[in-house]
Length: 423
Image (cartoon, rainbow, N blue to C red; front, side):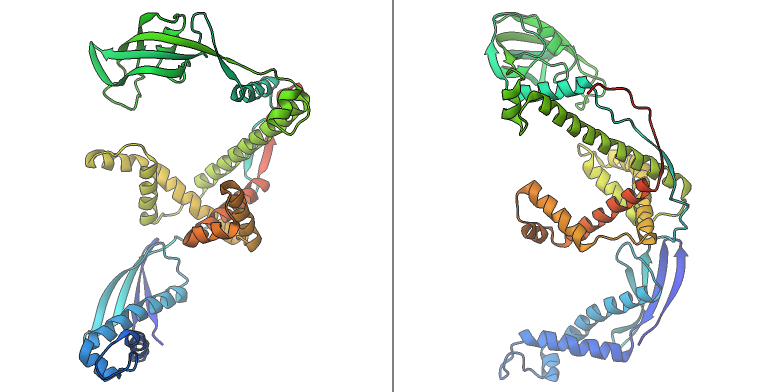
């Protein structure tokens, strides 16, 4: 059996040199021939029964040797990786060092690996749990939001107010010139300052049906369309209709209609429990972020460049727009720090999971598949089949979440002072 030697190029890159012995190559050639001959068709021979000598005369010995090399090199490389307990992060770059009769006998694989991490202490990290009290106003706001979902639109004979649903025509211009997306006819919109550029909705408030008015509004400096950012537009607005949302009575009948609760008092308590659960989840994420920030600060190790570049690629995909080559290079540089933090955090989580024997059990995977099944309304077996190779990513996510739970459960947590909230 061949052996391998290792040369450390950097903390995250090594070179493996390994030989392919005559015996290994001969065995691989036998397997390659048996596989290839199954589909060989030559006159005078039944399918799959062509002698090897005849096969090589017809197709060339290179067909067998090439198939054998393609098979045996990955096997020997994988064995060398196990021999030196390496954790590659990408496919190796292979180089033939020696060959005989056109067959490689010695190769070098240059490969990027995970760095060795000497973990700083990760138990007992100090963190503050945010207050999770839910106010009565938040409960009432949620109740009103449920009411809005069942509200009816009622025409009103009065000036438009913020919050009304109006039908209008508008034509916008900047310095007298129209601009793309600046006009509309018979559009039905909610008059809300959060839905339009500053000044547009408030400028329409107070108008009556049939009235036409000039409304000025300014595009924010950070507006996505650079040609409009920071500019003031003048809109000619004609108001055709004003309607208001008429909320249903927020009583026991309403509670029964929108939930499984029998009274509005029970619905309020249900909403409080839900909002507290959401707030608790936010608090737990805040603790996890604080713990990870401290772990990133106290652990220092080199990062595999290919992982950083891949993470930058992912961040670019999340970014809006398609920058040009020059802008793209600048954007990649600006994303490097965040990408490095993500890669470093992922490596730390992985190392802590290994140290604490945290793994994705079959029960964990089944529970996650069941959750996905409920979310998408598909059988768990179909979800598993659809995931295919992405099941490994699912398991990685489970390990990450379990490791973060471990870090939170073992953190030194102090609570923020909780403000008093009436029940």
